[in-house]
Image (cartoon, rainbow, N blue to C red; front, side):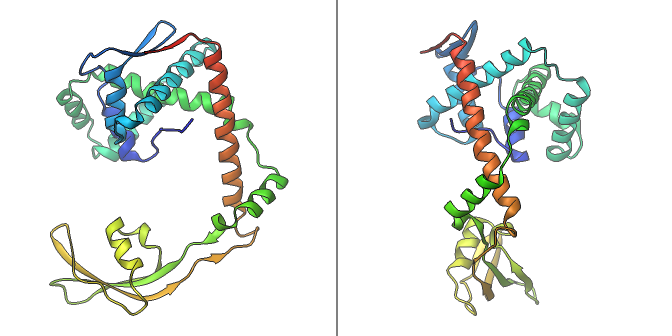
Length: 266
């Protein structure tokens, strides 16, 4: 099952601040044992994830899995210590609210989300992550044979990314800024990356307006993607093998949880 979990801090915050109570009670999407998932809950999750209704079934299934995992954690007496929860909340406050917890509280109040309810969401996030580590991830390894097979089967994954040198002229400023041997996607928004990719070495873009300013880009040098050796790509190969094995093991574990539970889809 496709993992819909979010890893970016901004998206994680959006998840944390999404309304937990259904904003429109429009029927039941599923039941997991005695627990209910409303259709409006699924739509709330879709909105916070930036997805449309075409992903409804997928998101509903993700919420089912979440409830199963939290239930399994309770059965295994897995608890989340208060300091762990507080550390996670502090990370969110620091990264998204400039360290001001009052701003978090004000945001929750504006969205009519009780702080205790939001805190439970954070706690459940941590429980799901801990359960996945305890049951799946810590047992996943990448053998030398598996890594060699991965490297042979997907050589395109292990090419060093192309890099460019760019001169950026800002309208109204005297001197351009130089960026040497960089990956544009690490520095610029997608529309700028597309403009840079279309340029030949020595070519300049038209003026591009962004954020109230106008910029012009010149590509002064470019290094194409090159193949890496097995040794050079070792860490990436290992990570890919472990990730794919982890995803397969996680899916099998969730299917076992489903098989042992009464689930009804509406």
